[in-house]
Amino acid sequence: MSFRPITFKCPSRLSVHPPHRNYVSMILNKPRVVIAGLRGGSGKTTLSLGLLRLWNNKGRRIIPFKKGPDYIDAAWLSAAAKTQCYNLDSYIIPEQMLLNSLVNHSKDSGGVLIEGNRGLFDGVDAKGTFSTAALAGLCASPVVLIVDCVKTAATVGVIVKGIVEFSKELMIKGVVLNYISNERHEKVIREAVESYAGVPVVGVLKRSDTPFQQERHMGLMSRDETSEIETVLERMAAAVGASVDEEKIWQIAAAAPPLDYAVSEPAASSSDESGAAVRIGVIKDSAFQFYYPENIEALKALGAEIVEISALVTDMPDDLDALYIGGGFPETHALSLSENKHFTGKLKELIECDLPVYAECGGLMYLGRGIVCNERYYSMTGVFPIDFVMHEKPQAHGYTIVEAVEENPYFPKNVILRGHEFHYSKAVNLDMERLNFMFKMKRGKGIVDGRDGLSYKRVFATYTHVHALGCTQWAPGLVRAAAAYKNSR
Image 1 (cartoon, rainbow, N blue to C red):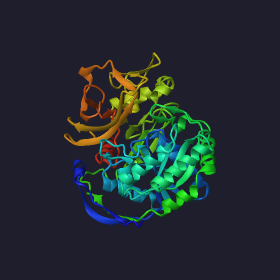
Image 2: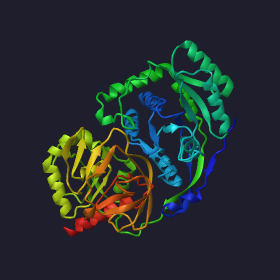
Image 3: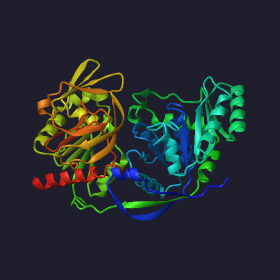
Image 4: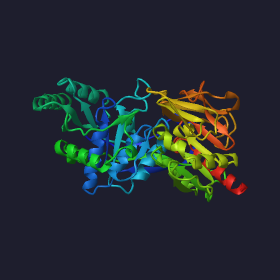
């Protein structure tokens, strides 16, 4: 069966994003493969990490991408590949910009591995919109499917056959069987998959093959919370290499058809933020880890110097023009954060002097009065009169759509943005008379009563995470606020 190059045309639904112009033709002709599953927890990450480390050990420079809004899996993929992992999510990133990111970040690589999320066809609706399958089609990438075979046998072959026939254009090129009990179990399923679906089984992982990985919240334990990272990754590579035909999967990737598509360059900015020589601090430590690399790249592209700092062990610098606080797990470091009074005190002092601060999720919690975790109260920065209580179950998890309903330093009023939220904390003890909300939730929960985006002076704090490629106002807004602060001193 032969494959034709796919031409991508920007659909009209992207009208929610800023307009673009200057369409140019680009071709993606790199080895690439999508690792997908039938559900979350089926083994996609283990297979992806093992393959990346095996290929890296052979000298192949593979750029990993993670489908969906995800920080933790992406960090592990970066560690396995020994290079930066990027995110691909067409819900929050316009397709032409997503493809442009795919090409630009992989142009000097030896190939691409894309790890899917959830089940292959799981998206925002019954049609599978924004699913891993949709992304694989968009990127014209062959798929290797890893299947959880617990308490099933020939039925796996029927399921794979159904997937193949359901979507004729989807290139299902290989299947990896996971959680296989014994040789007989493997033989029955292998024969069923290959005879019913006509797809080769390219690997088998037995129950004991999958190295133990601790999990917390919505996935793996974060890379920064795991000791002996290299040992864990090498164990995964050994397990995958022993029973998966990684060279066959590489051949599948190398056979990916060329992708010819039209991509538009962003319209030139009319603001004066380009080339601004500003210093933007980024709190990056084991408490605050969640940053899209594209967000940092966007700030750098506008001339910002990035200064990484820690809220756990250092003092707050007084020579910054702005501060960016991402998400993370401040609750697991609540005592250390609370005890670093030099940092919180200096930060609050600078905020009162109009230092621009942009904070997401964990950063929002850090700017509140305190965090309640395991029935203990830990004081935080105290910029906003609000507390946060940790719960065992998620308080919000999913995509968001927000509308900026008030004037603020970062986003134009009435602009509609797409993002995502996931947190186990809940806002309590809110002093509503002293809180100013900038976002109205059109989808998602936000902080309280369908509102999000707290603003105070030049501080903006929100549960909603945004991606710079989908929220093109974000980076210019932060750099512009930094330049204004620098010029006012």
